[in-house]
Length: 159
Image 1: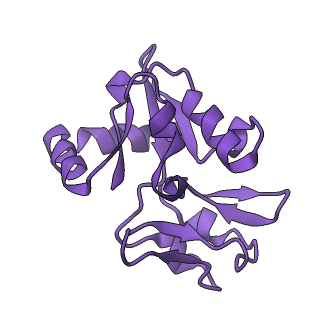
Image 2: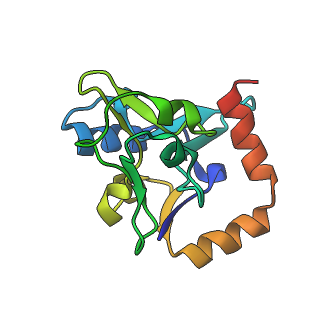
Image 3: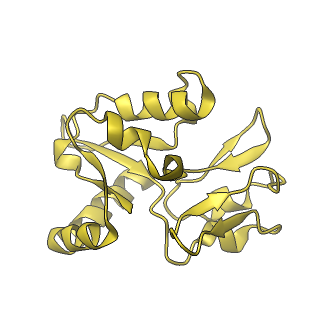
């Protein structure tokens, strides 16, 4: 299962950020959300963005203590907060900017797909964020072509 994000359906309400932060922090702190809604240069165009669960995660390769691993069964790349030493190498290594650092706890964090029931997908009022089988997301992404990733990279880099 993977998150599939259809930015054409996103209204920029940021409900995903609110519920994500509440689920993980037990408080409404969108700055600590594992998903971020980026604003496109086009008016009223928004792109929800989160960890893409890379096939070869640079964050895991950069971690000096192997606190970031991939679950063999689910494919989920996750951070073990008990092993994280807070060096932020993973934050620097992530090419998408999907890793974050919690200054209060001194550990890195990222989307963990809410243990298989992503709050952002459950709460998205427009269906812009969906949790789908991998083969469905792959087929949809192939249909969209490279434009989707170029658009997201453009927003992340702030160009």
